[in-house]
Length: 147
Image (cartoon, rainbow, N blue to C red; front, side, top):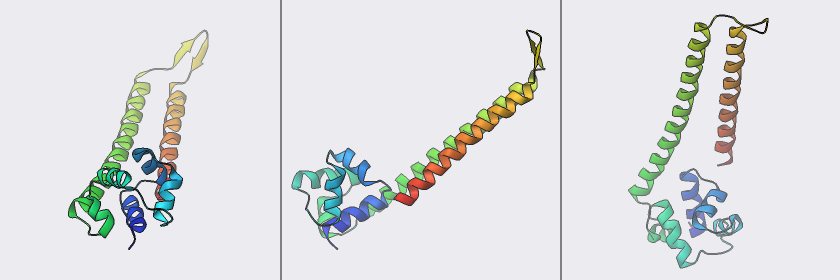
């Protein structure tokens, strides 16, 4: 396995795109692509940055001996992503429940002679939250497919 293939494999295992990796080590996305396709080899400074970013040694990138630490770090990154979306989902549900309780506690409001139905307001807010959640889910699925 070549250095480029190892860089690509490690990048994909860590769940990041070429753009994200390029931004983290201060090179262009095209440079990452050239490394991964074995058109160019990374210089020593870039190998050091890659090793720091992937939490492995330069030897791991060069000779391909995978360390347990890299595999553990990959699992930790995936776990952090799952926890982030779990937190986001829980926050949206909690906010929806809070809105539900708030609007149930209110009676119909009359303002300037116009009666406002609080249940309609609640339904609209819940619908907006639902759309936000679905949008975030779709974006995440698209991100997973691109990786």
